[in-house]
Length: 178
Image (tube, rainbow, N blue to C red):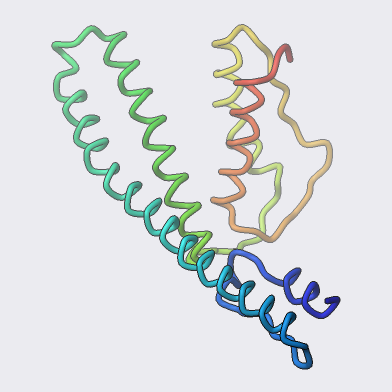
């Protein structure tokens, strides 16, 4: 049982193709092994289907969203400017959801392109601070983004910016006060 548990603990989304094996076992344990492996097979298939579905949906949504955005831009003169801006904001938000879904699907398939570089966290915060300060001002709030001391990291800069964007967006959306 402990060897079986150890094998099961090693399984994760990227290792669902592995199966458990019990070397010396009586018939009941071999039957349990067979059932666990059948369950793992079904999980592997379902996980792949779900990931592929997410990816396909995201790809299929990109084209109509782009077309809508372009049509709104073309018709900007004939649409109320406030409505045009609201529609553009909503399309941008939907586009971000699609991009996030594609990113998750790629990550789950182990196909996430990763371009590691060395940079300081301060440089990313400085790049993003003006945008988030403006967003906070728009909500009559204050946001204080600053580095207390430099910190250099080796990571994919783009993904780090996305992580920080998600944190700051959630702070503005769900937080209160400064």
